[in-house]
Image (cartoon, rainbow over all chains, first blue to last red):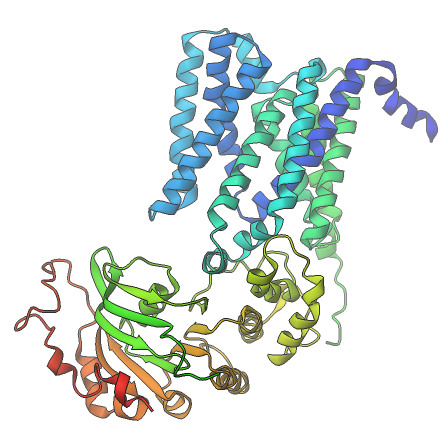
Amino acid sequence: MIEPFATFLAPFVEFGFMRRALAGCLALSVSAPPVGVFLTLRRMSLMSDAMSHAILPGAAAGFLVAGLSLPAMTLGGLVAGLAVALLAGAATRATVVREDANLAAFYLISLAGGVLLVSLRGSQIDLMHFLFGSVLALDDAALWLLGGISTLTLMALALIYRPLVMECVDPLFLRTVSRSGGPVHLAFLALVVVNLVGGFQALGTLLAVGLMLLPAVAARFWTRDLGGLIPVSMLIAATASVSGLSLSYHFDLPSGPAIVLAAGALYVASLMVGPCGGLLRRLVRTRHLEA
Amino acid sequence: MSVAQQPAPIRLVGLTLGYDRHPAVHHLDGTVRSGDLLALVGPNGAGKSTLLKGMAGEIRCLEGHIERAGALAYMPQADEIDRSFPLSVMDLAGMGLWRRSGAWRSLRRNSQAIETALSAVGLEGFEARPIGTLSGGQFRRALFARLILQDCPVVLLDEPFTGIDARTVDDLLALIAAWHAEGRTVIAALHDLAQVRAHFPSTLLLAREPVAWGPTARVLTQDNLARARNLSEAWDEGAPICAGPQAAGAHAHDHAAHGPGAHDHHEDAA
């Protein structure tokens, strides 16, 4: 029993770069999944996908100015993502068009701008780097960034938790008792952007969404209440990070996709055997209760 | 609480509310007196919900304005509540404590108040139930518990009894009567005229234009109801720009036609 377990953890004991990758992924595992939980509960799962595309032109602009520089690309991604989130949020509140439609419009503009920028300069290899990440090459700056994003996310969620829940459940009610609905919503969108930007350092823009959403969706099969969803989603994300990294080392796989595929496997397993609405539960007919 | 000393909680001044420039409530003037128990009555499309939305600050006035004094609680007709959200009945009702607890203060100190409110609407023992498992009537009761906890001097209810069984309606009417006795102002949009006659001392009969406003018995006459029915429901895409309440003649703003009780509710409301 101990032997396979030791093999599983060996790369983290042996290699510094694996430990750094693990630290980065674990930091992301406690911050991105809670954001994903709120996204799925608001039926905005696909919004994170749109946002990850919206970040592209910012990162590309940073890349154009400073080459493969972490601060420049992060800053660019943040600016582009926040701009799209704020513009879509503001347009939704000021007009009759719904948020998903506004977001689609703004992210398409942003994405097209990004593709245009990238095509002006830059080789395909460089582009692949920030689309698919380089978790095995996290330097100190990137680790600080991931840790900072994680801390910021948890603190911000604690601060806006109650109004955010009210915004999700009954936005009209929150509007009648408080003006905090707008700022809370925008703060939440900002957290989505910040986590995606953090994720694209470790996993790449496309796969950052995976660590945000897959654990959140999988958690729904294990618990019904919000107080349970958040820790369970974090646990699933952490498990996916460890096993994904270990598998990528042992089988010589690219690490970003390995982590997301591990999260995907956990999602499929939850879908099958999860006690809250899992498929297996449906096959076994239990006798109904008296009242 | 002496009603006479209270300032008017809601005053409507030349109020026109609507959508896309088409008025749904047209040139409405009047004052809701403090402690009033007012029914809003009118055919579909008469502007009852629109008026309540306007009072709650949900939509902007096309013309005129609404003067409000103090906090109000509003229960919309079609709530935007996501019932699949994993939230307990206790948490839903507890939202009513927002003004006291804000974003960070613990609700645990007020759990007694929440339980009392839930038992007042007959939902004791439902505290831990997820909101998605409640029936329509039970859910309405939970929303009423939230209204109790909001503890506002003015309560706006938009068709609060739609799809509710008779016993629950009686319970909720008793709750509204208790609010009235406490001196709160309650305004409710309703369709059941017998209910309005039995429980609501004053009524505003709307048909986009105000038809009559005053003591219920003098408002809900055959004559007034027939006139409310006749006022057209359809909105006209090619309608001309309204010249305002002063324009007499062809435009249906002849205020004399609103009949007795239209604007004299200040004096004769019992």
